Image 1 (cartoon, rainbow, N blue to C red):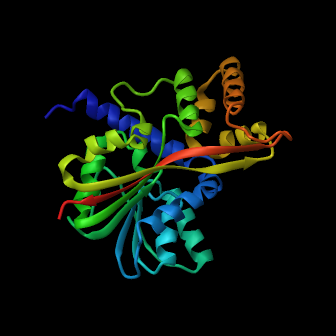
Image 2: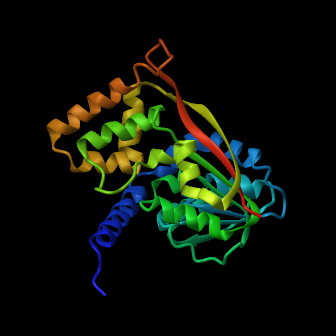
Length: 274
C-alpha cells in the first residue's frame, strides 16, 4: 500500500517535534507551569488509589502532582530525555509512578484502563487532534474524567506561537495547538464521547528579571522557540527577538524593568459517557 503525503508530513512533523522538545532544558521552563498542573489535579479531585494516565507528561508536573496524592500513576511521553528528567524529579520528590515512552496518538494501553486521564500542555501539540482526543477517550473508563490544561489563542503564550508562525509557517494541514484552549473546539474533538464538560479560563504569572531575560530563557530552554531561532538567518532572528520582546508590552504589569505578566490557559474537565 502506498504511503500517503499526509502520513509523510505527520511522520516528519513528529520527528521535528521530538527533536524540539528534547532540545534545551524544558524542565526549567516546565517549572514555571507547575501551579497549573497542581490546580488541574486538585480540581479533578484525584483520589488515592485511582488509576491515572498523564499523557504527554513531559518532565512530570502532573504525574508528580498525582503521585503526591497517592494515585496509581502512569506517565507517557515520546521524549526519552524528558522521561529521564521526570524520573529524576520523582526521585527527588520521593514519589513513584510508571513511565512509558510512547506516542499520545497511539497509546499502547488497554481500553478503559484509567479512572482519570490528564494532559497539561501536552495533548494540544499532537499533530492529529482528532486521533489524540479519541485515544484519550479510549483509555479512560466509562464515567471517568479527562482533565486538560491548554494555552489559549488570546493569551500571551498564544501570542508567542502566533508570532513564531510568521517566521516559520506551520506544516500545511496541521491545526493550531491553541485550538485545545477553545471550549467549542474541545466539544468538537470529543463529540458524543463525553457526557459533560466544565471549562474555566485561568492564568498564572510569569516572573522574570526582564523581558530580555525571559527571551533568553526560552531561546535556550524551550524547545520550539530554540528550534525556530536555530534555523533563522541572523537578520530574521533579530527581528523575531524584537517582536517577542514587544509582545510583552500590553501584558507586563511591572514598572521596574522586570517581567510580571499573566499567562492564560484553559482548564477543562470532561466526563466520559457511562
